Amino acid sequence: MPIRTPPATISDVVSRLDEIVDDAKREERAGGYFAALYRRVTLEVARQIEAGHFDDGPRMERLDVVFACRYLDAYDTHRSGGTPSRAWKLAFDAESDRWPIVVQHLLLGVNAHINLDLGIAAAQVAPGLQLTELQGDFDRINDILASMIDDVSDRLARIWPLLRIIDVGVGRFDESAIEFSLRRAREHAWSVACKLALLGESNWHGAIGLLDGGVTAIGTGVRKPGWWLALRLRLVRLGERGSVAEKIAILE
Image (cartoon, rainbow, N blue to C red):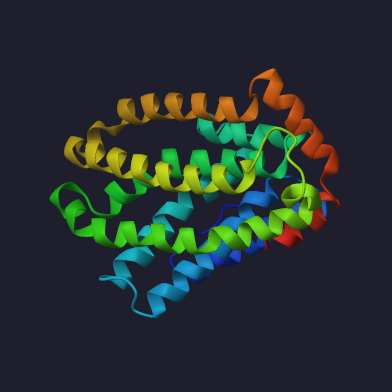
């Protein structure tokens, strides 16, 4: 894989995500589900920055870029045959299994990117006592994400048409799981950022290793739930419509 220049702007990030989504559709890789959703969120954050929704727009763009680079670096490492963080490896390895449903793939990406990457990125952009100045804008992202949940649920219902009609034991697994995971994950990420900001970047290695282990454990529960839930998720998987590429297109 050729050496890439790291993104410097949100526009650069979106361009890279476009490439990843297009490659995933062409290669029928389920990792494209997360990339497609992430692209939509990134575009909405960019729109809100341009609209002056944040106290410090330039700082939020820096955070967005630093944050995205952690996913892009993990993706490039995996695609080139290397080993990314354990949490990302778990998410990428799930692509080779036909049974995870779309929501599981999304949650694996959310778990790695928010539970692991976001706190690190926030502490990098606003080190030490600067972190307190970031919190207001950081929390405003929660409102943006919440505003997108219904649309995501509608798109998931197009993939699994029975979502709003029958209950096969998972209930509102898709919508409630995504909303819960995003909000709680961001709360966790802020806690991680606070701890890392106090440690100083030179002391992060051990703390990030421990964090990666815990996040991977959470992802393992998503990837391989108990047999009772796994059985019901298989029924959902059998009811999902379309090829991987078609499902990615629905999430875009």
